[in-house]
Length: 176
Image 1 (tube, one colour):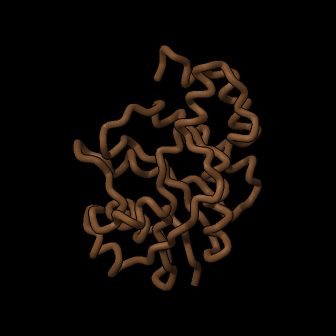
Image 2 (cartoon, helix red, strand yellow):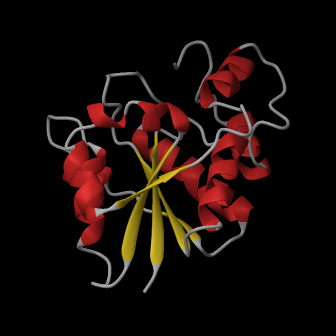
Image 3 (tube, one colour):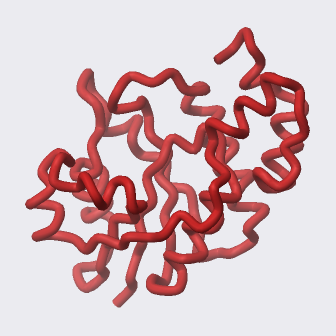
């Protein structure tokens, strides 16, 4: 039996805050699957999906832990409607062994409003919730703001992601 933490996020871009969440999840689970959002449920503008997936792949390379992997699947299940956590978990359920267990990773903000999640009761019945703490307040919004202001992003993301962002103007004032 494998305990698999599913961490959905925009990863717009991945940060050291994401890394801390992964480290917390690995204390309770055998694997962490990173699932970039295909589009934001509330219509927020993000870097293109393939670019964010590429950054997550670089991020996992930096983490250098085979238990942490990219699972880019939202583009396969997305229609005209947003893809919800329930949809992701249902799609991933078909990819695991019958005795494996999925855990949805959420932070304290989402835990407080989890009842508003699409099919929250169904999620609770079929899967486990793994509530993590926000111990490192490095958010993607802060990293994007630093990039737009041409400020250093040292201490905000991993080295490969930082290198990628230094050569790809993903978040210049003209692109996001």
